Image 1 (cartoon, rainbow, N blue to C red):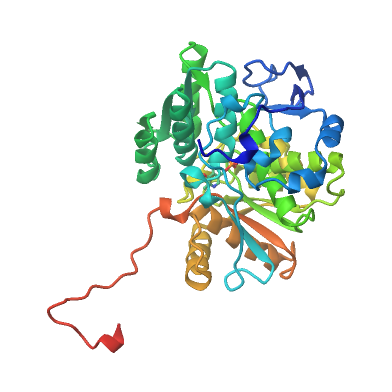
Image 2: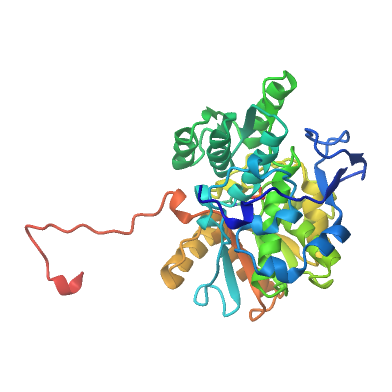
Amino acid sequence: MALTANLIGDRQTFVTHLECSLTGERYEADRLHGLSQAGRPLLVRYDIEALGKALPRDVLEGRPTDLWSWRELLPVRHTGSIVSLGEIETPLVPIPASGGANVLVKDEGRLPTGSFKARGLVMAVAMAKELGVTRIAMPTNGNAGAALAAYATRAGIETVVLCPDDTPEINVREIAAQGARVHRVNGLIDECGAIVGKGAAEGLWFDFSTLKEPYRIEGKKTMGLELAAQLGWRLPKAIFYPTGGGTGLIGMWKAFDELEQLGWIGSERPKMFAVQASGCAPIVRAFEAGEEHAERWENAHTVAAGIRVPKAVGDFLILRAVRESGGRAIAVEEEALQRATAESALQDGVLLCPEGGATLAAWREAVAQGWVEAGEKAVLFNCATGLKYPLPDRSATLDKDNLPDLARL
Ligand SMILES: *Cc1c(COP(=O)(O)O)cnc(C)c1O
């Protein structure tokens, strides 16, 4: 089997326990957990001191640069629990024309199943397998369901996936093609989630909703670890993250803390910008109102399906990270995110997904408002390949039997 060298041999993990993100209450590791008693996400904690002794930074730097190079900072105990589809390090691609000289796109569309949901789901599925789960259900706007289907099918775990009936068609078909049973629901993702919760309460399956099991965050955390290593352990000045459930933003914030405890980075942090679409901006509304939690957003709509999340269970963790970092939550108009998406493709040859386009539009807004400087290093997260979304038709037709002046094509 052509697994990465990082997966050969049994693994060592430094997990000590899990912790409620709201109350700090402790939970035992190596047990199946959903949310905490308080109904909030659980965070995995490690013995960072022992980890630092076992893993000098130069040892890490000598490894192949994929997700599993971080294995000591990840929760899986046994290599045999992992089904890998090749979770590579994703590149930082400059977009000097549509962005700026120091604007880099972290192109997560290169990952298996074409989105960064692979990072979270490869981890969560490995842990589910390790802990004996045989049936999983999940609500999705598309990409998470596709990643779950791919990894769970390969791990021999049954999956039921519920998505809003207007989820991009390619996603719905991709989920089913990879072996999940997918149902289109006449509601939004949180309404799909309520059905998943009902079935879980009846004991029909394990609930894999965003942040309702503890390990997707750990997978998404690798975005922060990887970014730090790629930039020579100097974090950028700003990160623009398209925010739905916020797993990635929360995960990166956690990663930076762990890296600082290891002494691999200092105490400086990027300004974290949580980017939403103006048609679904619960986090932005709460940020601007100074609230700690975000109310559900009614009548959510945006083409950026991945960030159409009316209610996030980790809302307070997103808001806390954004505020501590000195960043902001920014809503961008539909027209601005579509223009940004078009311009990055036309001017820089980088086909962003609409959620990625939203981060470019938000960066422009942040520069215009003076929240970041145009020349400062900023990283935009493009979390899926643009190829998964309907593209505008910019073609013309040509009659082979009646050719015009070819010089004018
Ligand atoms: C899921 C998704 C997001 C949002 O990610 P969260 O970590 O849940 O906030 C953004 N963009 C794309 C393409 C996605 O699939």
